[in-house]
Image 1 (spheres, rainbow, N blue to C red):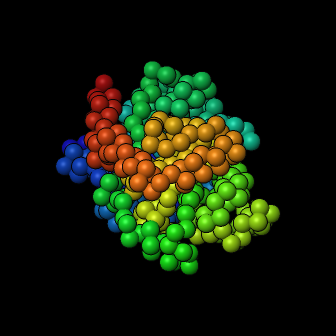
Image 2: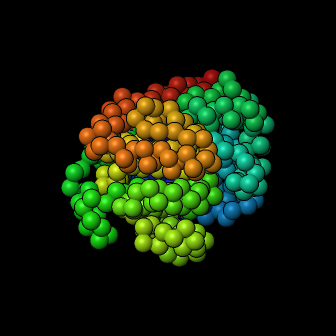
Image 3: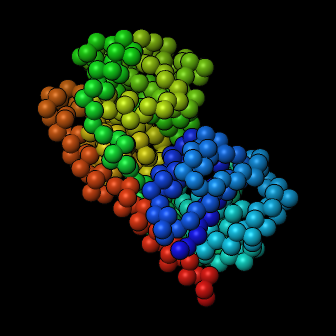
Amino acid sequence: MNSVCIIITGLSTGGAEAMLFKLLQHLDRNRFTAQVISLSTKGEIGPRIEALGVPVQALGMRPGLPNPGKCLRLIMTLRKMKPDVVQTWMYHADLVGGLSARLAGIRAVVWGVRHSNLSPSLNKQTTLRVMHVCASLSRWLPCRILSCSERARSIHVAAGYDAGKISIIPNGFDLEHFVPDEMARDSVREEFGLPGDALLVGLIARDDPQKNHAGFIEAAARVKNSLPNVHFLLAGMGIDEGNKPLVLAIERAGLQNRVHLLGQRDDIPRLMAGLDVLASSSHGEAFPNVLGEAMACGIPCVVTDVGDSADIVGDTGRVVASGDMADLARRLIELLELPIEQRSALGRRARERVRERYEIGEVVRRFEAFWAKAALANER
């Protein structure tokens, strides 16, 4: 049996953190034991991982320069733990966790690349600096690098990462958790006091410039002008009435009674299954979880062409250029105006696409095989 220690920047709610949880949830405990170290806090996901029986440690590092004392603690922890593989998860963990693992005498260090837009206007300068340091160290520090998408791989190779070390394993989705649900259509509309024939478009994303909520509101206004019975459900961390810039954008667009801000929810499968269409207006993604989740629920998607979004959706939805909110609106209207039978057929094809390409059990088996090969680095 092999052991893996996963070092992640933090465990707040997000797509990368959610994928880590799913990976650990479906990991074959007869092949691997796992432990998780968060450089910062346990966040919302840490307790959920602990409930799986996977130990979680939080070092309490603050954003900015690494704390030398806590880095030393990480090195000593890894020396004591002696995992067969250290899998790091996101840039800061790649750098701090990777260096600490090597100083602890561990050669089997696997980096995790989960980012696909390196625009200075959409990323913190500290994040970009860490990425560039990682690029310069990629030929020496990790034995292998995992990317969650082809777009992320190509962008990081262009930024200086060692192309020969990068493999791709996509995100995976639980087809027993995200399922079509006819009753959800009625229950979601009842929750918000909407008529049964109301059309629902969803945007499920945390408050982040990369997600482009402002652009979505622009598109939503165009959709509403063509389809007077449409409503929009927005959920995610920071997407609530306390988000003043978003509320102001909604008011300026005249959508106060059409956009419903739900904040962070724990019933995303039900919400998604109650939609007619899911939208993604993002400026940057690598492999957005929400697309696979909606598709698994039988909901077609309209997405911007960022990360691997176009490849995920394929011919089961619609793809528009990043930033083209007029076209996003047109494509949303196109799907919403389809007869329900045709839209349902798209949704069935979407779920089958997830089953064929991104089923969580198969994705986890690929991680296990990858780690088993990486563990051989410690034997050299």
